[in-house]
Image (cartoon, rainbow, N blue to C red; front, side, top):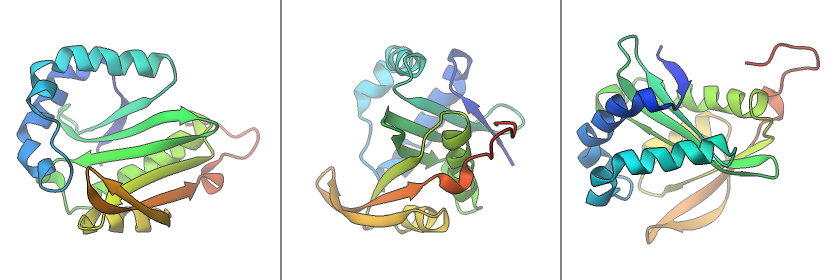
Length: 171
């Protein structure tokens, strides 16, 4: 299995390659980031790292043994013990359980490293793969939503079962 790492400046080349190589694949199920994202990638990455340093968000990459980025797992808008979960997996790594594994791992990190008690997520109705990942990872549907004008579902997951008992070593 790959390793989940907290995003850092050294990830920039591999992350940029991941986003470029998978742009069309991602755009089939989620809104495209747009040309400006790629033109201003370094500036955007610095802004993300600033948000992470401030504790507003935590950005992670899933990397293989060679350091290639296979996915992203992000916790954004951290407040009041909760955050929004976002994730994307490279096309070449899809369909092998990596997203489910990564979401479960990030739930553990959210609880034990960042002290969160709940995660929120959302996906469009037509993204069956993402809906399945959330269901397998213990997220419950809590309502309907719209994502970039498309109908979707909102999810919530308590992290109580991920919290380490007192005295246990955190991840």
